[in-house]
Image (cartoon, rainbow, N blue to C red; front, side):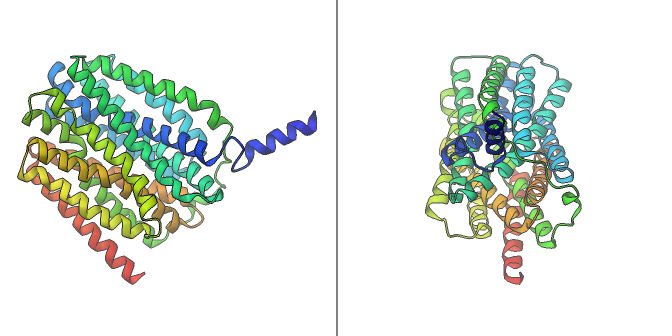
Length: 393
């Protein structure tokens, strides 16, 4: 009996158990990211038009709520930089927190409470993203299937698409935003419960003491700044595309398509990039993606109609998760002995860029022309910096 217990313990601590097949790892990571990003981060985007209609939320107040979520995301990432968490534990408790804060969002109409809840949901989302990156990618690498990380990151697009479809159905059936928040919270809770035992069987040991105090290389910091510019560059359309669609198109069954298309493009893009471009260096994939992203960012500047908005959704949705995946791979490559800390630094830079985006919209009194042009410029400068550092490294 004692020997059998030792066998069970050793299997639980191994980097890949029989339960942790590549397919199982992909599904766990995919679902966790779907909850963290699709619900914890981006569910607010398709629900913003509904909250404008039934809660009287202005676009400026919507910018505040978006910013609160991004500040929370930044805070969570900074905590992970200073004290890298145990990966599986960060995923489990982060998902639970997202479920609770999403449910609570539907139980109040107070802007102050909304701000606090969006902040907390953002912090929890950062823990899940860092946890999934530190948990799934090494296991897939050890199983000689690193290319399947694209399937893991497809979870973000799946979550966005799911949240968008929920918002579409809610808009067509005239459900309130409050009811929709509660429904999304219940869904997040069910998924967190479903993964709880699977992640408990795959926990990893905590990072080595003192590992987080070793300075990161200069190249990591430069690339992280570029990653922050990417966060600023994409966040304008990622936050306000559905609101633009609502202003330009009166039918909720039509303007509600923008966000599901955005999410579907994000879900498919990472799988295709990993399958079709497996040999392309992460930094080059990142750079190529940002040029196409910049096109999507400035498209609504020139035309606000269904065709233009769907095109922008495809450009932005089809690149931002590819760039995220490539950026995290680059962070792990440059991070050396502390890849989780490098990923957390990139996540913090990304969150900081996202904070600036909605603030520029607020400072522009809700107008998107100047913020969109600045976002495209930031992406171009990021690409030039990446190209320069690649030549000099």
